[in-house]
Length: 285
Image 1 (cartoon, rainbow, N blue to C red):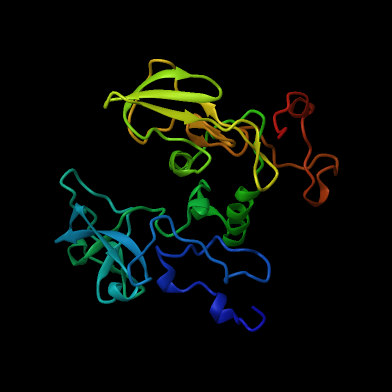
Image 2: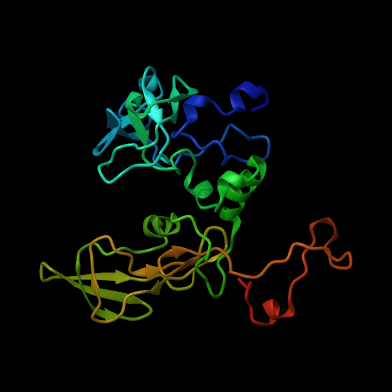
């Protein structure tokens, strides 16, 4: 850490789709502790791979997903996921931005070999949860993606009005939540357990965690989101954990915020709170 120079810590072009260029600590470990990008995976040789759809003569084959390492990308041409596509999966734009050997050029869609699977492919899950990320300054995005991990569970969680679409996936794959092992029908539900009679005729029993302490000193509490008689699919979310609401990540509240000066009371990043926010326990954790 003491000898690591700027070159070691800096973002590299081969990070694209494999390591997030945004989420990293702010202190002496900046650029040394890194996070996986959203779709990155490790192959059997230990190299990081990122997925692409194959493109043949300007037509995208959504059934042909290829995971490539950085060295395997050399020589191929990659299109961004934001290009316009018609009902036959053909790219309709006459000219598009293409990444070729880590340089960006303008070329025809017929020249493209692969297309990115998602606009979130470049960033980590935390950075992907920031709405309008492309309009943010990179330093503030770094702070935002790190600060999401410092959010404490509120008494009353509330799903965000403005979201990126990744919130449901975060809830589904979170260790704080439970998903149905098999498809079936809910035959018993209370605050402590859920019983689901599956299609095989047996009953799956789920024990909920109530008011347990997490390693960070916050509360772990699971609330059922299924009702008696509900039909559930395999892999469907059946509880809301702390900081989740209706199967979505819910770290904060939807409140009206004004950016203005107010008699000097908000000098040096101070904020003025409405008394109602305090009385109604809106931000009480």
